[in-house]
Image (tube, rainbow, N blue to C red; front, side, top):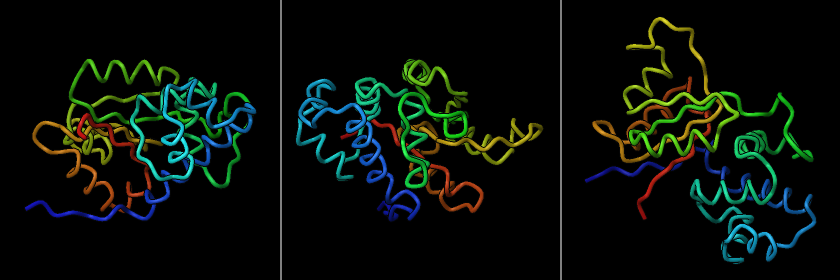
Length: 190
């Protein structure tokens, strides 16, 4: 029987922060929820739930919202990670809040390519499995000789070969060095 773990405290407000950033961007553009939902091809009640922090969103939804809100995807995540200290400014984020380093743990090359295109302005490190992701984060295995780089964001596929995405997530959230790195889970599962 699989053991369920509660969401770490640092991630529990991620949905609320994301919703607040979407709402701020919408207000900055001066459009209603209905207008944003229509432009982003979303149902209005779904968008209302996102803004209230009551919905998990897919990467496709994030990409549609970012495009519609005229904010690069990586900057949208940077503002989510920076909330509530940093208000969203008009236009692109400053270099200080822009996401520069993203770790993508994805075994499917086609999916990795699509994600890389969405994050084209960020430094995206792609690893093909959870073990390689852990080696990258902790400077072990094939990454033992490099200077450690702490990503600002981790994009994680749950369905990975050998070690699952959930086990990877449990390991990084259980380690003091990596537990506060925001993680966005990507999955095709319902």
